[in-house]
Length: 267
Image (cartoon, rainbow, N blue to C red; front, side):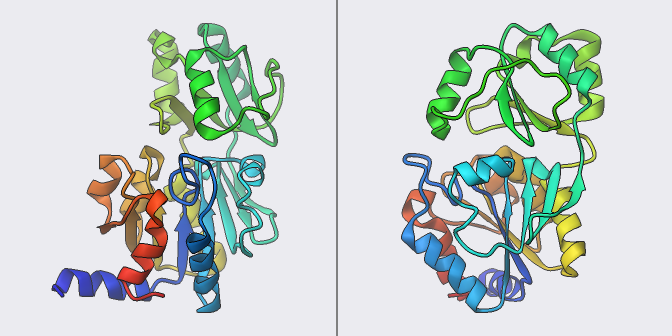
């Protein structure tokens, strides 16, 4: 066994908290379920005394809908790409909201719809082809509400016709928001003072821990995995995630989480 594997194994074993993305990491991209081996692995981490948390682009309703909220007793939740952080009792310890006026101006500037995620999740306009593809991909057929935005809290916004935004509005978005693409290449926007990398810092401080391991697969995981003590890219992950991670495991459909934890001697 080479020294890099030994060093990485030690880093993972010395982890105080494990963070897991949801879609494409915990959830299989095909049937949107969590495998028995993954559930077993999460419970074994808890039994061994590790803290375990979610780190996802989904909001609270989204993790309920994905049936991951009650998989185990989570020690915390980094939600909406880090714009909302909850403790183990689901109490807010950090939140950063999108500006209502900016949302309205973006929605007015484009023909396509926005998905707005906050205390609730809804769509501002009738779904276009891109959103219909996303609804099918993420298994959201029964959960899309269509209504105009008024004053609802919004932590995370997904745009399904981002190329329609130009000029001063695009400049303002780049100044006020962090931009990243979802699994299908659609643009997500969150407040600039958030992000999964920031949300994990907030939760780590709240829990008085420093060493953490992260698992992820998408563009919104890059900064958080880059800053992790130890990081694991799913085999189905994008190349940017693999480039910044300590190790690339098997696909989510091949029990990638379980494989990585066995590989490094955690289980």
